[in-house]
Image (cartoon, rainbow, N blue to C red):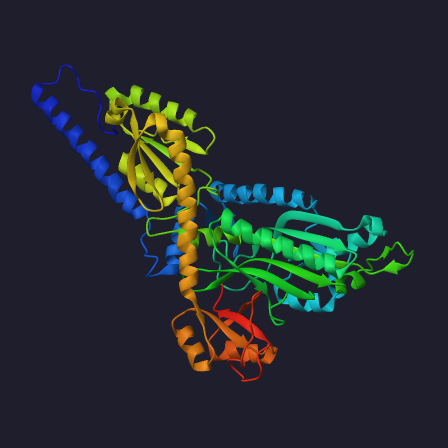
Length: 510
């Protein structure tokens, strides 16, 4: 019953009855008009090409991935966003098992004295550490990363060459006391991540497995998230605090900024020496081991939204989407039973996929189309009375909006192929954007032109930290991203003119 319209009194006169019927019809029409108006208001009101920052915030919040927290600088990850993180965890836990890395958990709080043991590490993280005063003992840091507390424990656990290689990972939250503006998933004071911490007897072993993990990160981004990334080594200025050297995978977002998607570090022997980690070798002498650490975070979810989203909302790759398929039954009262029966039958046919039926009757089909497009569901199945009679359904792709009618008997094979095609199309589109964004330069004039065109710049570089600082100062924030593994240094540094040590990717970044 529509509010304000009660049942007609049988004793009412015909004129009153006619007025009530007309009122009811107008109310139904207004309901649909209001829903369409609400759909526009609840949809994305900023264009990706016009106001990227506002557009991004809208697709994350209205797309049901996250919301702002009453705690400044923090975010609330909603069920859809957390399901994406669970899918990433499920994928990567298989990789961890492949390399015999076991999951564990360490405390959130770290004694201040632990940071002081590795001075370079302490200096690098000092501006971002949140401290808790402790009346009973020294003050405690809220975990910005876990090297120090984990390695203090390793000094007790590792005794012999038989204990190596020693490989642990933890899925946890970390806190970086950022002072910049909150950007959901990209820059928040608290976020979720995984951090692997491994110990080896030789540098060669550490190097090998550090690169293996980086390649697995790259594969995850390509195959699961449909985001192409550039693998390489960080410059001395940008390496992880306390590491011997750092490698990374980097994406280039449609806002023409680079986004670090994951890192893998060779920590050398510095942390082992600082935390007294040693082992008795086969030669019955004490040795200092080599260590690695590596991680990815919920930042990947922000990358998904930015890379694939459009002016209608999120566009999620099928392999990572919380819901891969949404069925929208279209019916009037007389058709409801038979349409829903077929919709449920189709859901059973496609039970191997993540699939839902939107049975809500208080919303029009158009409203539902807009809502599920906003949430980025890869594939929509529409079915109405005419489709039932023809034994068919209509499939609608989220990535291209293409529609096609198919016979229900062919639905399993067709849907499977279509979802794979959507996954590939999203990657190919992103990869084409990356290729078109890269510009190779040799001179400072060419460099500045590429900066003005907001490109990802590949340029010869001397490697000096002071020169890197100079580039950043002269370009209002352009920084080194990483050194590609296929770097081919020729000629002279694009900035200072010294002999080039390697080629480097430069861009503005998040």
